[in-house]
Length: 474
Ligand code: ADP
Image (tube, rainbow, N blue to C red; front, side):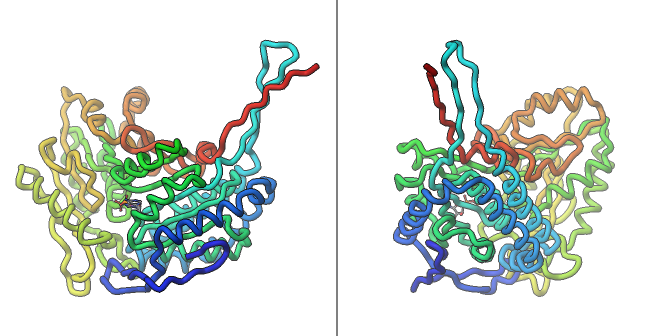
């Protein structure tokens, strides 16, 4: 753990394993309430000095961290593949994406502008000033173990906040590696603190209920997000929540079905389907269903599951047994209710992979609303295709979910694209685009997918309070 600029060991440790082999990679300190309080106290002590540095100084630290991160790209990517399982190419892309946030917020730090507002009184002036919200508690998930950390820490530091971070118990090594890099960048002691823990509950509880923490930023499941927001509510702490999704992917009959299927294959199997923006319901117009399924099936059967450090592997393991059970249950349920299995459908038990949590890339068609996969987030490598016809209310079907994170539309008709974009109740919509994400663009959901935005100018606002001065001149 990293508290007040010191690396701390504890007697108790917990094991970090490689999800491709089940083997232990390392052990890390197991923190709890005590360490969280120490970390919060360190962040509180560091706050007065850090929050009054100039934005140019804070920007310089972030630029430095960005350079170091690019230098360490390969090593960080290899560590991520071992700890989290995604193929090395995907891990390298994630490190780049993670570094992008350091650069973006190094730049944005210098643009924390205030405002002046005209008054109806002749001798009055209004001035708006922006100030950091205070000490931030951050909790991050295992599926993007590097970029979800920089997406929170970079804007928090740019704004002038100090931070206590708790990474996911499955991926603390990536967090430790990042903090070593921040330390090397010279970020002053106490400004960022890291508490690793096997049991997230006491740490999460302390972060949400400790009066010093003024903001909670969380990425993870909707259930846990709701719990943390509830715990933080009595003190009316600011919260940002990036939660689950259930993305519709709509292919209209005027779209190129082959192009759309290629896109679906890429975004559905991103991180073995373990991304909150992965499509969960792929709606395809019946008129173009055959060529769409043909291309998607070919792409899926060509995917190679295995250890992400090996050449040619495109599908990594799922995170754990629970994830494997959930996927198996959804596929079995869909098949029992009449879905057609066109590819995959089983756990991968090839020699060498039997101890990892591998599930074969799977294609189901004729999926219907009665099936679990139609409404439950899958978080696994299963493409569920739902054919639709002219008389179906496709927008209503797409919106019929408690989630509202990402949605995708494929069409070559500009009117249809704009109307569908406007009517979909989701925070991010890809229009003939499977990657509507960037450090420069606001990422986030509506409904049960969350509150607040990360990245972009909006990502910095989350860490700033608005302060007004009304001045009467004599
Ligand atoms: P996922 O389904 O992506 O694993 P989780 O919401 O379980 O999502 O985990 C995301 C993060 O939330 C992790 O850092 C995890 O340790 C943390 N977490 C899980 N449960 C709790 C809890 N009850 N209190 C605080 N943090 C939690």
